[in-house]
Every structure is written in C-alpha cells, then in structure tokens.
Image 1 (cartoon, rainbow, N blue to C red):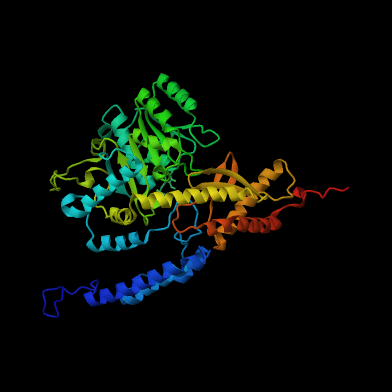
Image 2: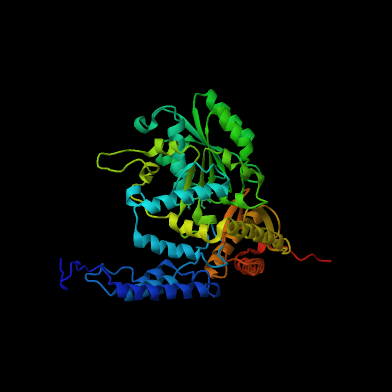
Length: 504
Ligand SMILES: Cc1ncc(COP(=O)(O)O)c(C=O)c1O
C-alpha cells in the first residue's frame, strides 16, 4: 500500500483519478453516441469468420504482465466492438427474439455499475431493492397480472422460466422435494412441442430428467392441443404418475403462437397442476389493444416468465419471473445460514431466487418504463406488430415468396423459385436452398433474419422487437430476399429440378 501523496487515500493500480475518469467517460459517451447515430448506415454485421475476429483481437496473446493506460484500452475496446460486432440495435435486425437496446438503459447500466449495489439483500441495496420491487410490480401491471405477486429479475427467459419451474416443483411435488429430492416421485410436466428448449434444461437441472416432459402436439397455428393434453393427463394419472406442471406459451419462439390460456386454466385446476406461462417473448403484447384474446387470461397463471430484454427493449440481460403467490418463491428458494445478518422487514432477494449476490438489472428497465410510460410501450409494441403484419401482407405481392405464418410480431415465409419442378425432391431442395439463402442473408449485413420450422418446412423468420425498424426497412426485405434467393438458386439447383419450357 502506498500513500505517496500524504493523503489517507490508498494508491491502487486500478483506481482512476476523478478528473481522468470524467474525461474518459465523456470520450466514451461521445463515441457511443456517434456509434448509435451511424448505426442505420452500417451493415447489420461484418459477417466475419471466427479466424478473422481472433486475428483482430490477437486472441492468442498471453495475459499482460503489466498494465496499460485506461484511455487507450477503452478506445481499443470500442474500436474492436464497433468494427467486429453484429448489431442487434440496427433497424434491420430481426433475428431470434433480440431487441434493440433502449439508450436510457445503456446509461442506466453505467449508473448501476457505478453504485454497484448488491441486490441480494435489502441492507446492501436499499434503494436498488425498492426500485426492483417497483419495477416488478409495474411489469405485472403491464401484463394485467396481480400487482401483489412475487417476482424478481434474473438474467433472461431461460432463468425466469427455471425459477418459476422450481417454484412449481416445490409447490406441487406432494412431498418436501427440497429435502428429499425427486427420486421415485414420478413427477410429470406438460407442454406443447413448440416450447422453447429452456424446458429441457429445467427438467434436467431440477432432477426430474427430460423423460418427465410430456410433449403435447400443437395445432396448425402452433397452439397446444387441449384434447391431446387431457388424454395424456388421464393416461398419466391412471398409471400412477404425478402431473405437477403445465407450461403454456404466450408467444412461441418459432411463430409467436399463443396457447389458449382460458381453456388451459380450468384443466390445471381440475388436475391440481401449476399453470406456468412462458411469456418471455410475447406476454408484453398483452398491452396492445388488438392482441390475441388469450393474452387477457395471463392473470390466471400461477407464474409467468417475461423478458424485459425482449419486448421492453432493455439491454441484455434482463428476465423477470412473476409468481402469483409471493410466498411460493420463498418456499422454493429460501435458506438462512448463520453468517447472514439481514432483517426480514423488507425483501431480501436472495430469499426469492437461486442467486446470492445480484446485480442491479432492474434499473435499466425502470428508467425506460419511466421514460415512456405505458403509452410509450403500447405505441412501440403496436408498431412492431403492425410492421410484422405489413411485412406478411407485402410478401403476398412477390410470387417467389411463400407466406407461411404471422402472429404477434413474427412473420415466416420461404423462397420458392418460379421454375422449380414440383415433387418430393423439390421439398428437399427448398430446405437446402432456404438454408443457404439464410446463411447468405445473415452474412450480407443487409438485414438479419433467423429461421423456424413450420410443419416440417424450413422457413425464414422475421421477428420485430425493434423500436428502430421503419416501414421503409420492412419494405426493403422482400426484394432483398428474392434477389439473394435467385442468386443462391443459380448456384445450387440441379438441372433435374428445372421446369422444362413448354413446347407449343
Ligand atoms: C418463448 C421463449 N422462451 C424462452 C426464451 C429464452 O430466453 P433467453 O434467451 O432470454 O434466455 C426465448 C428466447 O427467445 C423465447 O422466445
């Protein structure tokens, strides 16, 4: 320890003096502002290979022995990231379910890191804990979920669903599952075949195992078949299995389908099982006046997972688990070791979830909710949905594009060459062609889509959770896909699949 200037301050290699910190911060914020301003003019991604990225980073260099000036480092980090990233904040990014990040959230993360509250326990984060509680309540209000529910922030949809899953397991196992485990308990969980892969991780991590999942067929719209669900429940009950949980989707990851929640809630009551809604993507569409009617029934669920880093446009990471009966979270997660000295007059978040030390994820979400209010979100989410419907309608004007599905803000479609000889071989070729088209499109930087599989057919998928996307961006997509589709087709198609020109 050196106190070379005679002050009581310790001299540390990591410290940055206030004046220098201010200057570095201003420079960095200037660069970020410029980056955001220019984003629409840049490619969505440079589409570089892993080798190229590692080369730019000099990835194989050893750990530095001595340090370097922070200004240089921040400038280099910004150069690397601005030049070699995929930008999900770009107006033409429509892949997976990843939103543009609200600028106020970017600044909120800086502020959260500066204060660095540990939101694991109230005494370590008095204001931050209360802001988290308020934000959780506001999210519940947006969804029409009981405002006195329990809830907390986690890293994203997978973790929010897992937290609710574990609360359900604890509540419905029929024995003290936290002490005795699940061996021999024959616990069963139910969900449609369209459910996101988090369910497998949850079944695995929770000790139930993936064989405990009963995959129920979905209808042509991607919604769980309630008759098939009932039949499976009956079979399992008669066989002495113990059904504990139904996972319903409020916006499937593939096509945005919303399961029939008003029909599912009474089935869950009848069989005494927990109704969990995976609303990671779509639950927030409940704010839109013409949203699917089933979303009005979110309040019937025992728990809901929702992702502020999707349709609240928060920077990664922010997921939120909501449980109707707040006590059920505590029942599922609380332990009080002797080395904790926290009172119980306020919420200690370590009690409600798997984490101990916790960052202040809620701040960026709280700031955005304050910035635009309910009205702002109704407007942005409605616009995303409207743009998706417009995209779907526009696709119909392009004979080489086959429109497949549209729900919430997801549209799916595929490229079908005009002169493709129909038949079985054509289907296999269309899969190969559209895969290749997607790869070319993703690497082009002109727009970014991902894919879905609809009735066994490989589809291109545009999911708009992007407050920067305009009608002009959307209208540019179909001609782009047709152009790249024709190029991919010219490179791939075997002669046998070409329609012969009809002879007179
Ligand atoms: C319906 C659904 N559930 C869960 C998830 C997982 O969310 P995350 O990637 O935030 O863990 C996603 C992600 O797209 C999703 O769409």
